[in-house]
Length: 243
Image (cartoon, rainbow, N blue to C red; front, side, top):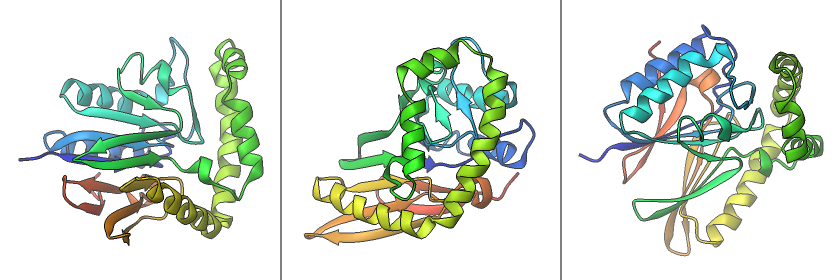
């Protein structure tokens, strides 16, 4: 029996004992035997800056769970969101997962998938683009890598609140930007586009030049516990309610 491909985003884990953290662990336990690949499309954490020998203790339960899934033979894919930087230093080097800072093109069951968190498509906030360009560059990586993680944890709390308020006030324009972007990617040959960041879950089936295309908005795990399951044939938008 074919195993599922699972897609989710926007968990925004902050604390070791918070509900969205614990519910994700419970969910991952429930899909361990039925999943081929797990794709996390950004903002798994409310803040992550990778260090070579340090991880935030608040995240230890979920990191242990990912290691368990990896050892069980599940393929793991991680994309960075706008709250995350340097996934490669743990998820790539230690967990040996597939890590992509911005997007992933992958073939699944003879369909061309384009996966992204979606913040780079966000045209409504020039300030965010400038900030992301500034933070995600080698010089800043070097400076942050030599500084104390606790300092950046405090800064992240302030930036996170600003980012969430901005998204709440401009979500419709973001969706419009996604639609324009999807049209372009479909014309370039993508069959399936899956995006996070909008916190607005839905699946749109489209027929473009006689070919079936699918546009997926993952919603979020933080408030909806939403995820998308692909069994090799069809997509299903689901919600996990077990803690």
